[in-house]
Structures are given as C-alpha cells and as structure tokens.
Image (tube, rainbow over all chains, first blue to last red; front, side, top):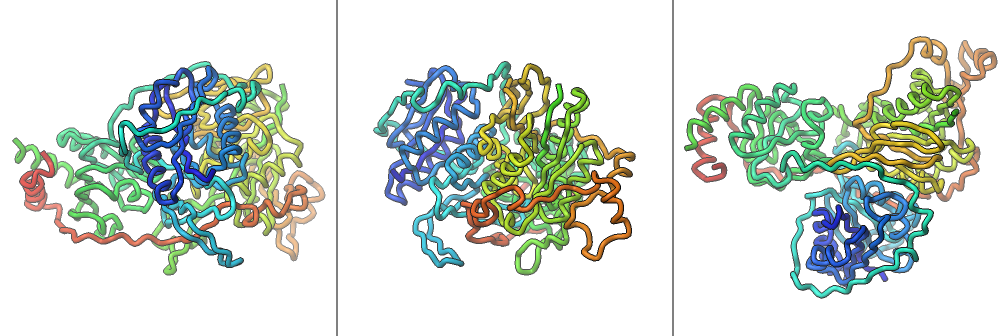
Length: 340
Length: 290
C-alpha cells in the first residue's frame, strides 16, 4: 500500500532507458516518503531477462506480466493489468515515460481510476499543499512541475484527493543511476489471466517497423541547435556542417521544427529531447522556457543572436551578437584553422 | 457503408506565435494578445474524417467542441471544409476543467448525440500538449483507441486498418469499430475552406454567439435551421456538475510561475572575425572543444 510504482516500457526484452531514469527518480521519492519502490514489467518472454535491468535501480518488488498478447504493446491489455493491479496495491504515485506508449496508457489508466495525471513533467518533488478555498492541508504530495501554455509559464500541479498521483516524464529529463547491481528485490510473476480478460486482446498489430536512431542527439557532447532565426532549411545546412566539424549533433527549437526547417526528432525542449551536452551552441534561438527546459543543464552555452535581449542570452556563457549566417561560417573557418 | 463520425476539436490560443506582450507584468497569460485558432492536430483529424466521408457516401461528420461561446467558430471552420453538423458545449460549469473533467464532458455529450462509429481528434492541443483527452474519452465510453494515427488505410467489415507512429518507427494496426482515434502531427494537412460552403454557413451561429438585441438577419435562423448551431449546457447533456469543470478535476494548480532564469555572467562578443577566432581559441585552449 502507498508505494511508488514505475511502469517499465519494454521493447522485446530490453527495458527502455526512460523507465530506468524513472526508477532512479522513483527510488528517491520512495526514500523521501519512507515507502517501497515497485516496478511493473509487461511483455512476452521477458521472465528471466528483464529483472537484471530493473532491480539494480533499487526496486523492492517487481511485478512481471508475461504472456504472448502483451507484446507488441496495445492499449487495452496493458491498461487492464495496471488498473487491476493498482486496485489491489493502492499505490500513491505512478510514473511512466512520456513516450508514445506512456502517453497512450497513462490517460487510459488515470481515467479508469479517476486519478489525476500530469504529462511531460520536468521536475518531481514532494511537498505540502493547502487548498486556498477549503483551507484543508495535505502533506507529502507529489509536486508535478511542468512548463505550460506553450512554455511561457511553469506550473506546479498537485492531486490532493485522488490516488495514484500519476505523472509522465520524457526521456533524458531524469538521470539514471544504479543503486546496487545486486539489489535484493522481490520478483512476483503475476497470473496474467487474472488481470487481463481475453476480450482485451482485440486490437491487432499486423506490421511493425522500428528503425535504429538516425542520430544520437541525446548523448552528444556538443550540440549545435537552430531556431526560427536560422531562417530556412538551407540555413540548417551550415549548422550540420559546424556540427560535423565539432563531432556534434544538430538540434532545433520547436519553432524551427514547426517551420519545417528540420526533422521533428531533433526538437529540443519540454516536448522534445532533453540534452546535457558539454557545449551547446544556440543559433537564432530566442529561448522560450519550453526550449530551455530541454537544455539548461548544458555545460557551456554559446548564443548567437541578433537580439541582445533574447531570453536565452541570460543563461549563456558567451553571447555573440550577430547574424547566424555570418557567424557560423566564421566558427567553422576558425575552428579548422586553429584545431590540429 | 455509411459511418457516423464525431470530430473532437478545440479552439486554442496560438501559443506558437507568442509575442513579447503575451505575458502580463504579473506573469499571467494575456489571452487577448493571442489569436484563437483551430488546434492544428484537430484539423488533421477533420481531414481524415472528411476523407472517410468521401470514400463512403452517406457518412455524416459532426464537430464537437467545448469552450466559451466564441468557440462556435470551430464548428463553422468544420462546416466550411465539409462537415455536416456540430455541437458546442458551453457552460460556466465546464470551466476550469483538467483533462479528466474535459473527457467526462465530451463523453457525456457523445452519449447524448447517440454515439458514433468513429470518434477522431488530434493527438494533442498546443496549449496543453498533454495528449490525454483522446484516450480518456475512449475509456469513459468503453471503446478501443488508436493513438498517434498517421493514416486510416481502410475501413471494412467493421474494422479500421490504421498506420500509426510509434517511438522510432511505424506500425499498422487493425481495430474494431466503434473506435476512438487520435491523429498525429505527421498526417495529411487539412483541405482549405470551400468557398461555396463558406457562403452557405457564414451566418451559422450558436445562440450565445448572437447579440441579445438581435441581428438584422435573425429571420435566417427560421428559414434555414442548419444555421442554428447546437449549443449544450451541462444540464442539456444530463451531466453531473460534480464531474465537470474545476469541481471534477483531480489535478489542481498549486502555483504558476513566470520563470526567472538564474542569470550567468556572460561574455558578450561581436560577430567580427577577431572575436569569433578569439572564442574558438579560448574553447580549444581550455579543452572545451577538441
């Protein structure tokens, strides 16, 4: 009862990185609350393969649901197993990745249990809350913190009455950390038929293609990111050239992605990838909160912008006042000239 | 086959074009400074519905929206593109809804309408980016869901074949009707307004959109009943006020902050050759770049 649960996403027999990041965060929240961390893994042929990818993050109990119809993921069976498990276990917090699966499953589960769900949180903390109308006081609630309204404000959301308190978090926002490779957690093999009726397996996946990631933006040490100020697809070619010279990757703001300058999978920010590079070069990016949420932990931030008052300049280590199309070629030229 | 399709659509502030005056001094959102638009993903959902209608003569497409009276514009935008009808949910009791209370209101209205074969909406709205309302409506109606749809490939024998986006790829699923579908941003763009339909429906309004003192063309609403758009309150859809709006929302906003970034001590450079070369040398010397 009242434990912290993390739903682990599994591709074949591999646990998603975002789930391990959430297990790490979940462990910290459980410690703060003095409760246990529990994990749920559902798939086909996963028993014996996923335990070592989950327990080392400090999981006290792992529920494994292993049945042929549970992979590839479809909404109804995974909803049923979580809803029925949660009715028995009464968790106080449930975390899942803000992935395609988490964003399909989370709302369905929260609606079934009439519990609140906050999407795309960038911070999770424990704290108290007083209802301004009823003056009722609540202790140790989950603060679900996220940029809102297109990233122009940051909101702290709480669920005072309903349990579990549910939140989704994007990949890369939390950092994963193994607590103990031999952490002794209990493994419970669930009787799937007890949780999922046969009638749940109605949506059939008839074809599926997963491509290996085209780039490693999330893990890159150097990121050259472009905003709307880059002006065009052609403008981004220069950024790709600079990234290639520096052995980095190209990212973009939402405005640049929406304008069609670059692929969606390169979007950095709350609704894109979160990056932690050594060097972040922001080209023509004004710096909305929603973007900064995805890159503020970068080591050195260099901003190239014609506007000296661009918000991103406030968090930059170096600000170059100038046009992207003039400064970037100079960066390439002098990097080539000065590096060996 | 004839299908009954309900398109879920939302009027949203255009958060993609936020100017400097979009925030007030107090750090709250200045809604007046933001244009209200048809949520982009919902337009893509409308297009999918209209394509099904073209391929299946006799199919009826209706646009369901919730919002203040001015959200009647969303229904008109749907009619201009080929929708047959629409419903506006508007009531103070609906205000302040989180995604769960919103989906309760929409599901209740869908029941009032008498259900549908396909309920389709955008994956998410740009003012919240939660992607929660579609799946929650599906759950409340006890229907299956297919989210992140890119294209409805075919509908036959009571089943829809849908290509959908997944992390790192695509998959094709077959799901039985009735079904809730949410459409991903990568789907086909929506067709523009049709000039004839604009002429036909430009006076179409919900009762609360019309000024109390009346208009010179009030007679039209009697002559052409299709110009009189359906408007429903909580009571009209037999809704439970306790599950609507702020009262029906499990999530509460504890605090809203206008973020002030911890300003760093930054070096400001010009774009001159000397400054850029100096920066590169500094970064190389300090082994920040290799």
